[in-house]
Image (cartoon, rainbow, N blue to C red; front, side, top):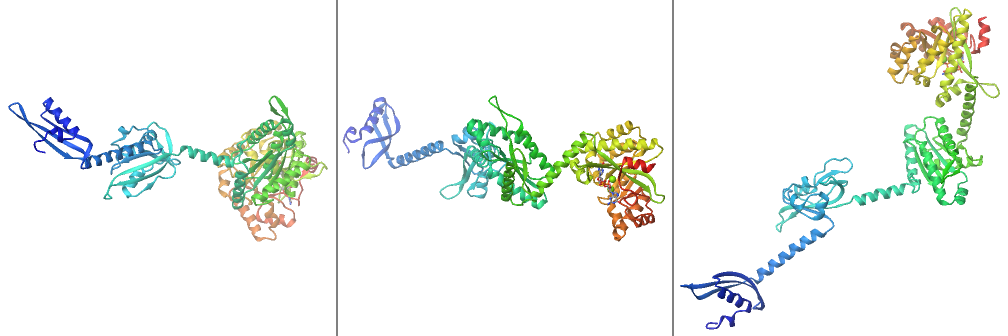
Length: 635
Ligand code: C2E
Ligand code: MG
Ligand code: MG
């Protein structure tokens, strides 16, 4: 090349640069140039031009060229790759956060920015736990970030199920995904990365789906599937805990006719109204389900007594008889209800359903607008309860509650000291019904308050009459547990005594042990108030209940009545004899009067006298009798 012109030898681009330096007098320049016509596969060249100047004259040029083709290619590749990565991370739908070895953030993509609420630049340099706050969605307990775990345990870590992310702005997201350590080519861990996404919507959707699968669309009540589950569960619990489950199948009478004549839209509105009315009758423990067009089911998982079922079933019938108003039109409806009770009918969920169904058909057959029990036995008992309740209501309303009196005697002298007032109710054939058959019902229905009031009033009046005739006969009135729950009971007693004009020491109240076994302090206050009125308090049927001696000292008790079962058995059964003996001596120690119930034979009387029991009552002396009869007895 010696002696040639630079212009002829150099590639065009290089010559132009060389020329520019010369003409502009640039003494030194370094630049990279891409050759348009590569020679020897040299595409990129790094050129250095240096003018040699002597006495301000350019005397020559040193031109150094290096081949940078392969370096340039590598650089380009690298930059393309990182750009591609950047674009990728920025455009994927998941959130990505990368950290260094110490879980300090060095990268965050836009989705991660959105979910955490942090700006990438602000988040950089902060610890992952500061930026990405995770808690357990149910317990709200803080969760350790998976990146921390991945870095510590050097493995890929899935995010805990149920993770919830709280963003900087306070918004919460249900998130799901995983974290992993990042390794360099040698496999050393150089950081961590977490990829996650928002699953709030899919979780909400799953919740909705499961709700839909278990609920009826129109009324949002549990459907057949959920009901079946609940009935099965209730039956299981019932059998292990000795509870009663009741299932009521409710079917709207002639609904098909209504639906056909009014149209399905109106029909739907009626169904919704029926659902609302049924819902208003039940509590939180009760399941109301819709299992078909016009069929509803009520599941009572813990029925305390049969009359509770009666009451709910009658409530259902009654509320449905109120007219329905739809689009300013009034409709009257009725329903037929079938009831099956576990374990009386069945202990199996499916069987309970078929029984309730059969009972519902029975109700339809009997003329609709009513309820029926599946079991004949329950149906019979229900009919009995129903008729007794009716008799009781009528007797109360018409003031026909009767009271019989059974004399109480001093055993040694056979002198009548007092009487026990015993309530009586008559059936339509004028036959007497035992209090044992209607007192529990009266308690369940609340009629006991009116009943008790009537007995108390008649008894006080009678005792006053006897006293006026010169007979100091103390009248003992039985008080049911339920009457004690009436906050006004003391006032009622005080008023009744006063109105009758009776000396309060001529009244005794008989309460059973079980009636006292409730709220200890409340009962104590109540009994003290009663005792302050001047009357006496007897514990009835003593020995059959808790027989906890402690309350005898704490409550103002005056009399113990030995239960008649012990008296009945004392002659043949040494245990009963021992109990009577123990109770008698206990009563004496505590300075209490003792009354033996159910004395039927002379031997009872003799033994009781031997044991030191002073008072008693029983058929041996007198049966309970109407007042007129007792009046005659007094003479
Ligand atoms: P109680 O208070 O233990 O009453 C005694 C019961 O034994 C009465 O039955 C009485 O008729 C019966 N009796 C008396 N002597 C004999 C006897 O020698 N042999 C036998 N076998 N029985 C005898 P009654 O009148 O049927 O009353 C049953 C229970 O009903 C009473 O037991 C009492 O717990 C309740 N009761 C009765 N009247 C009332 C009332 O006005 N209010 C409340 N709350 N309960 C009442
Ligand atoms: Mg009694
Ligand atoms: Mg008794």
